[in-house]
Length: 192
Image 1 (cartoon, rainbow, N blue to C red):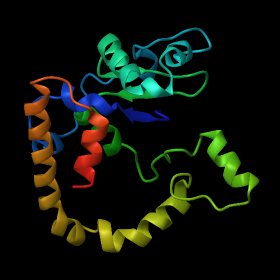
Image 2: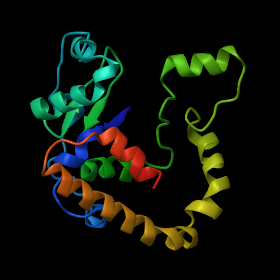
Image 3: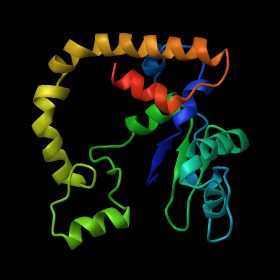
């Protein structure tokens, strides 16, 4: 089972030119799915991808993701030590991960020991980034009725989808002319 799935920030430039709404309508097909042990990736004994990650460092994460994509493809094993990590560089594939998370999705930072250690050390209750299982579900249900219910979502899905289509079309046209700073572009798109 996947412990983490990370969407590489620059995946937009690698995706096809289909619109966001077309991308999100694609159904799941398990065809071609590989077991974790068969995923390609930098697999140093015991260390996994740690040497490669350290070579790039946090400041060059986009280049690290680009290297993984260019070397290993859309999905690769980027585990570090015993922390199993899969990097997924295509939003259509990432969607499949979300579709199969089950009733209790894995919290983003629940197994990041520095985060949980901080909460435990200062006797602070876990927040939504750390909660899992039934505790996560209860917090989600509190928001569910007003934000995530079908009736609520139907009121904002169309404008959000239209906005995403505009962003994707803008990216496609601009990327064809040369590289763009995806970090700045995403901040601009989200705050628009």
